[in-house]
Image 1 (cartoon, rainbow, N blue to C red):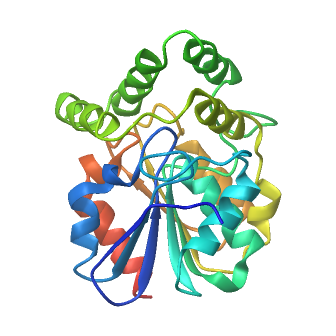
Image 2: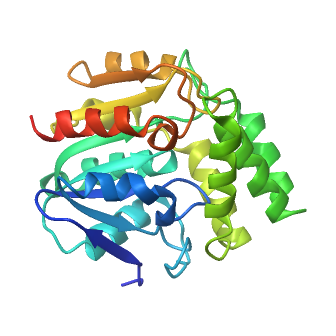
Image 3: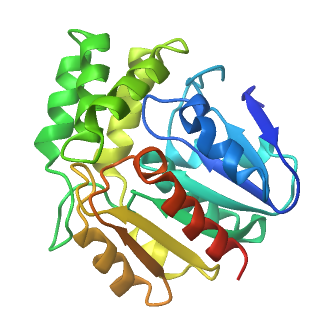
Length: 255
């Protein structure tokens, strides 16, 4: 089994937080500690990110199986941010008995726009992939800037994200490209329709990566989905709207 870096805080119902592309679990910071006042928070670095060892095949299926193997608790609630949202969706579909509740944070089952589904243009992801081959650091900083675009407290959050990016070794170019490929090619819309667990999605009205319209599209696919739209929030509401985001999570967890 691939060695994954895991940290846990607090006690109570277990809740696993899964970060996004090119990041690591340190990104959660004070937000994780706040949630740990109410739950047992489990933070995991994705393979090849932060302090987790890389894997030869960075695919969604493999990542999901590694996380299930690494988390000791047999049944947890899972929250995935950005790319992490697709990871937890895959986990919920492949290992339904291991998932109590599922939370999608500024994520979507299908990141790119297709067939009347709102999302990113493929050209944006292609541009990041091309830039990675030239300058990995510059590309990551460009991605970080896009996450806070048009959101509240842009300068402060951008500084925090930059510090988080440099707080751990960069993922390899191969891992980063594989992650972009997941965002570009994976479509879990059909898998989402069959989920039996309680699911909620938290999106930001000013998110430059995941359009707010994706929430309504998800709700059409899964009518039972509980949808929350945070006004003036960008791609990182756990940083810009931490109290509101934590309150939504507590409300959903305590149902």
